[in-house]
Image (tube, rainbow, N blue to C red; front, side):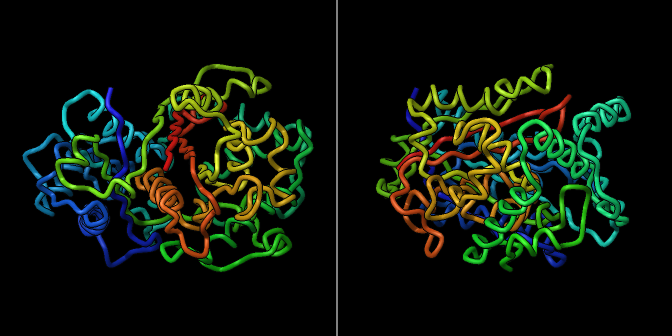
Length: 412
């Protein structure tokens, strides 16, 4: 199978885009990615469109990609709609990569777009309600709460304002980690403070205000141990990635020095496991598969983007990726090892907590950041000597872990 390269990336700013619709944001991201690659729309041989919420928010349940892409003149090629919860974007990239590896073409597009923010908060937060088994939601909720036994939330640490059900999920994960490994709320806050500091240098980030650890701890509570800056916001935005084979690079005269090789792209679903069996978390399994395909290991990673829907998510995922031992994620974060300039910088973009989380675009935005890092084009947030990068993007919930995990490894 042929090598595949990322040759173009583009994204909109993330945030509350009340003046932009799905079509507008899709066009902006795709045109930016094509311009980055030096290509016209006519070069595209397939497109994979990631979106999770448009059916809920706008009642556009079908043919979303065909509609969004045709509005900007892209047609007469295969267009596949991808819904894989918060992992939709990286799942779309996986399909685009495999389209090229199968020999079906030389240039393909993965694009994700979401219009999620609404002044109707019930509608907005309701977009997350079907990202788990709704037929068993009471049973699942009870099991999740059991994960946190032994850690009692202090009085006044749960918000009386509406928020996503997944914040309760991450709070349960947090309390389990605290009970088993001794992780502290301050260590979780250290992750959030680090990511908000990173985002100051990201002009596309939804939030660019720095926080200290104490400011994170003193912020309004969401649900213990999570406070507001520890949690990703609801966001609008789009991101796009153009991939090519070596033949595609040659045919279109693409600058090979800026082409980033895809060493591995893995999609993994979970399994029924005991919570204590952390080594077989679906992301840990995906990471092992990805490292094997890429021919590298955790010690080779220069920089990572991980799915920090909350700060606790980052701690769990850096452990799953093997960037530290299980149980050590909080401690290495508090020591500064995951900060730009540290041993293995994580989320130099600001992560979901600060950059934003427009669900279908999130995984592709991670790739956007890592490509900039590997090209050494990230400016003030550049990781010195970045050579091999990893992205982890999870989606939904099944049992006690994500319903799907995607791991992508890239190299200069």
